[in-house]
Image (cartoon, rainbow over all chains, first blue to last red; front, side):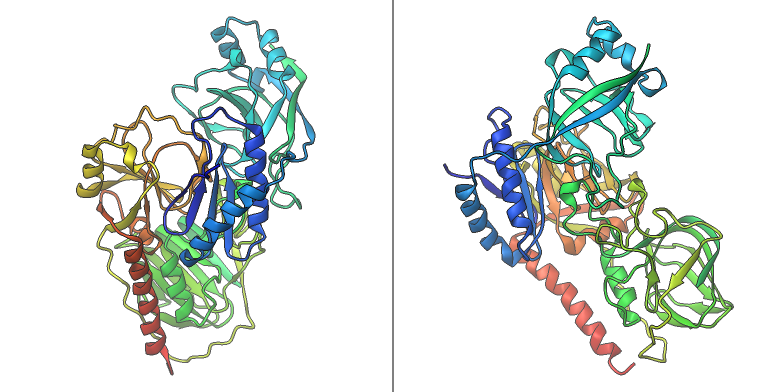
Length: 217
Length: 310
């Protein structure tokens, strides 16, 4: 298979093998493995997976040619086994002050709040990569019946730990920040702490389950 | 110690940023105008990456408890050490108990106050700079406030005894850039508008990104892309058609079309461009990127020659 690699600026390459194909965990697993190998190279500054793509920044532009060859070699030598996966439970308080948009989202899908919570917490999600904010995990697996448009006007501040739905995705805000997702609940888990040895709670490959510890209708 | 008697503006500790943390969602961060930070540090004989104080518009008063040297670069703040002036682009000696006052800037956006030996702050995730949105790094993870005290490296000794100054490079507002991965997906008309028209820096210009206003580039608004990593310098075009140029504290991933990438040698120009300054993009080749980097190498080489024996 011919790998598709293109430059981004003066010292980065993007490996984007299948931009049109359906989202694939096998491909993501392979890209994360390649990123891990590249991070050990002294010439590599960053190796950042996206959704089925990988961006690699080298320290100097003269390293780009070697990187291109390295990417090609790693692509062809990557193991077929998928990344190790842990299951992480995220306890969530749904509704009430913790989830101000719970009723709006339920109404949008003609569901009762209880049915919405059941659907959201029964699904199993997979972390594809961490990006946007420190510790923000891009999760795959939101049931189609819960896909919900973002808020027309984003909130100026969403508290840390807020669990939301934005379009086809669900996720947890690690930091207090402005946000346009529909907030259905909140977790007390700390998604990002720079003082921990591993600052992020979630990493690529993890399976995530939300458990309802409190429901406020 | 340095006592911050009064802080009326956005001031934070910054260095040259973090590396290798992008996959954790942690941006590189660091000084908005890296070259001005390097210049201020070199005037004092500090390492390039030594943490300094980055200052935005406002007024500041600092008292030094121990003798030191300071250098002020980047945006042009008016500065005085007690009653004597500290010229922009110069280093100056400061005695115990003397007060440094800064007000401005007249030109530019971000000023850099470097101190001999540097400000001492704990390293977090491989950097000393403050990531304001994440509330970590720098001085207790936040902006500096009146009443704060900063530690400085006291064992640092000056290898010089006279003030010296450097002329800053002029900001012509021309951002040299390479076409981005999605450039070809825009219409001819949009591509022409991007390269040939002037863009205005909007008031939404912060450490994360600068929004530009001008022609609407809407030929790619239907484009749906998978999320991908983004880096400082990337020019994104959201569905509204007005480009955003990502800066030091930008989010690590995005999904808007990447129309271009501003070269590293010119990113400081946008950081220092004030609303409603006009900027333009200039299409360059990879060879011209090398030339642009050489311009900076020559600048610092001439500085080193001029400072020899000072």
